[in-house]
Amino acid sequence: MSLTHLIEQAFAPAAAAIGDGNIPGAALGLVTADGARAVHWQGAAQIEPERQPMARETVFDLASLTKVIFTTTRILHLVEQGRIGLDDPLTTAIPDLRQYDMNAAERCLTFRQCLAHQTHLPAVEPLYTYGQDPNTLRAFILQRVWRSGPPVYSDINFMLLGIAIERITGEPLIEQPLPAGFTFRPDPSQCAATERCTWRGRVIRGEVHDENAFALGGASGHAGLFGTIDAVLDFALSVLDGSDLSAQSLKAIRTRESEKRTVGWEGFYAGWHGGDACSPATIGHTGFTGTGLWIDFDRKMAWSLLTNRVHPSRHKDSGIVALRRATGEQVVTLFDARVRS
Image (cartoon, rainbow, N blue to C red):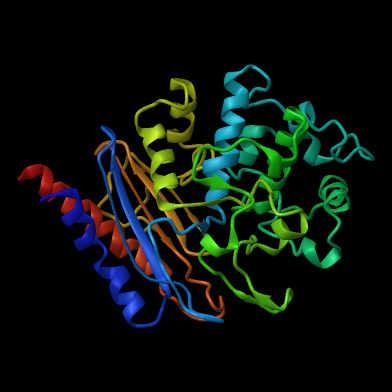
């Protein structure tokens, strides 16, 4: 079975979701460590206010894939360069973090803890409701007395990491260099639409869907990155073949920091979003807009499913969790059958 035939068959759950009206469109791609790849796409990049077809070149709002493709990778590069250590406190880069209380818990947080979501910080906060001046919001994030709780998956962790990157590099996130196919400033005409936003009063296309990232200027450590399916596969290949990260960094993203989380990523567990057929050596991540990426190191392959499932509204059951799992099961089962044949 060719990879092209494999990916066409594995697209069946997404095709059904499109046909049932649960999602407007999708792109599914697979890449192997030797660089072979296949991509299939179908449906609409936009259905409101007018219909636009999905294409291989469609640019997606990657949402929380920003956390792994951009933020985690950039932090690990800075570690490799010796500019920070994973176990250094954030105050190494952000000395003014909670500057009015030198005993504040936030001043003890490390890069590793934030990357692995092992902090006391909350999952999310509607920062955009406090104003839209990016510099003031950044100051608010740094000086807020955050409510404390058990470790949870937290956007706040990655907002802090994004600010740290800006401080270390001296460049705002939106100006940071990116690999081909990724951008913080996409051409709206090339993008998959996301939500009909009640706050902004329009269908969002070509600007970040996440309200907090938008209020922070369009790019944050937790969201704001846009990319094509091929750009995401290029990134996955660079992880698989070890061309972009050192052996130590690769070990970090594969080593558990908690039951489910590694540095930046989520590791395989029964019932997770990538399906149960993938190997225990698989890491993955998803994005709220309907995106996802999974890298199976045992099989030396990766796959990505990109959808615009929040278009035209997030307030419906798109079935994205079941769709991701079903797609992962199809990809891995068909890939194994191909290897055996």
